[in-house]
Amino acid sequence: MRPLCGAIITAGALIGLGLASIGVGLRYQNYPYLDSTGHPQWVWFRHIDTTLMFAVVSLVLALLIGLGTAFLGLAYHHHKRHLELMREGRLPGERVSA
Image (cartoon, rainbow, N blue to C red; front, side):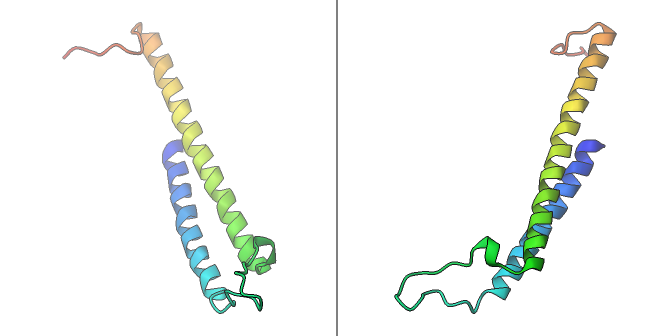
C-alpha cells in the first residue's frame, strides 16, 4: 500500500508541476527575449513571483516525498517478502513447483 500511495503522490506532484509550468509560461510570455544589446535575457528563478516560486518549490518537495515513499515502500515490501520466504524454509530465489 505504501508504494501505491507514494506513486499517487508522485503522479499528483507531476501533474501539478506541469500545470505550474504552464502558469509560469503564461505569466512571463510577454517578457522581452532580447535586451537592448541583442543578447538573450532570462527570468531567473529567484526573480519570479513569490506565489509561483512557492508553488513550484512545494510541488518539487511533494514529488521528492512521493518518490521516497514509493521506493522505501517497495524496499520494505521486498524485505518483508524475503523474511516470509525465509520463515517458510525456502530460499528467496526458489520457485514453487506447480
